[in-house]
Figure 1 (tube, rainbow, N blue to C red):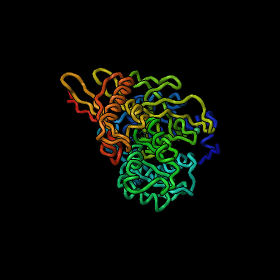
Figure 2: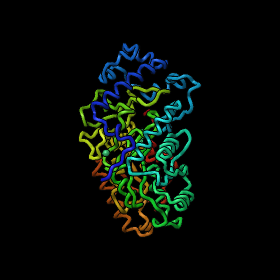
Figure 3: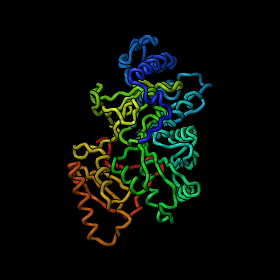
Figure 4: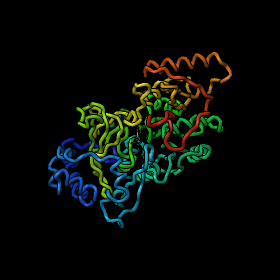
Length: 437
Ligand code: ADP
Ligand code: ZN
């Protein structure tokens, strides 16, 4: 394969040099963070009063973890590391799991962020000749403006279409010959579902690639989008606390996400014991940001579950690759005492070709027991008035899910394109069980 690198010197840097670079940046970050009221206290508790408290990368482990709750408690200014007049932008998380958290940027931070995103985009094979349609929400959410800036840095023609409004998305895609899309995987599937109805076919478009992220999805979902749209789909990972997109991204190998270790120090911990796991073992991702001055964060617990590949990537990049993120530690459902991740169910149903592009998991109480219902759309060629094949499909889905999660779900089939679609992150689970019981 012909690999292309945005910043070859950094992307292929020998690991010893990369670690030396991390240590130098870490020490500078510690020095700066002493200017925030949160870390001044935190570091004092750990006996760190200057950069000299961190002499090796190992010393980072003396600093306690930072959590989302810390960010909320420190709202709005406790994490600000620069003068307020030097802040040029703020962003906030989507608030999927509670009150959103706020992150500040100075001008240099925005430039660095854009260059990390550009590195991701260029590494998938895009060039300035590409036309990039950014089908994700702009505004406080980092996915819109983050990708926008990175794509402009690569020099692509950017169409800031934002999310939603599929009719207009199709028109833009056709009129300007869009070659690259960015969206959530669920929105990409939704767009494909609507194509025929809106009077288009694939020949009307010049699509080659899509970047899909912001929510967990399985390898089967990736393959489904690739097969339906005849494109390459690359996994994009980021979170607003770490700037947003540009943290980790797949290269042309499409096998694991290179985490940019000149900008972030990554650890994987066991979320129960909080100990670092051994090389390659799965756990929760913990990140320290080295590429942002305005809001330093050390050992931030992302709650995202993943692990590192231990083998080097054939592309020659030395930055380690993350495995596909399976979900957050707090996504886990406990159904009659059994732990179930929504991603386990997604994997099973998205691999079935008769199943459509959308699904929803509903959990309810049925007396003292929990009951799980999986609602799935059927494919476009299946008609809802022919009950025999539907019963067989329902039974097939039920059995396959049961084999995977050991729990017997109810399965409901819905017409193609009839389940609700969200414009931002997909809502895949409705847990209707009463709380605090
Ligand atoms: P919120 O935490 O409120 O959803 P963010 O907008 O910061 O706010 O979302 C970041 C989160 O989105 C990540 O922590 C992760 O859980 C999820 N996410 C982002 N990209 C991916 C991806 N490629 N695969 C799985 N999950 C992802
Ligand atoms: Zn690679």
